[in-house]
Structure formats: C-alpha cells, structure tokens
Image (cartoon, rainbow, N blue to C red; front, side, top):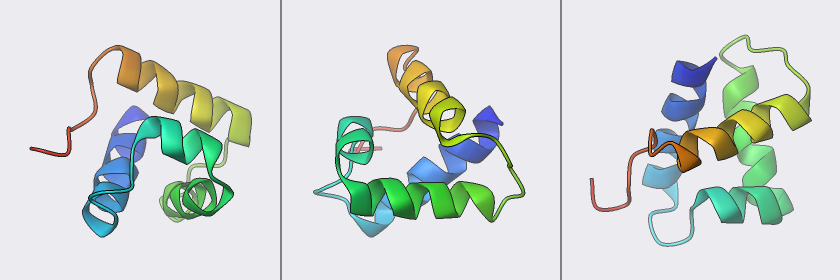
Length: 69
C-alpha cells in the first residue's frame, strides 16, 4: 500500500504544488477527498483511517517527495 500512497501523494503534489502537504491533506476535506480518490483508483480498499495513518507515518519516516523534488 505504501507505494500507492507515495504515487497518489506525488500526483496531488504536482496538481497543487503550493497548497499540498500531508498536514493539509489531513486537515482540508477537499484535498483529503482528492487523495483518497487517487488511492482508491489503485484498488486499495482500506479504511480511511488506515490510509491517512499510513500517509502520516510515511511523512514521519521521510518516505514522501518534497515540493522541491
């Protein structure tokens, strides 16, 4: 699931380069909905809590791309 989350985050980061971060995805319903839709199109059927918790853990482990990448 981690590779799907990284890909979805990367896609969202490209679509919203100045307004996207893990914190914003967790806080803003619009970004969260977009992120979850991207994840679900990749056939990941996990509860929202699990997806967002794993996303947050990826951020803590520095496994996500940065805006400058």
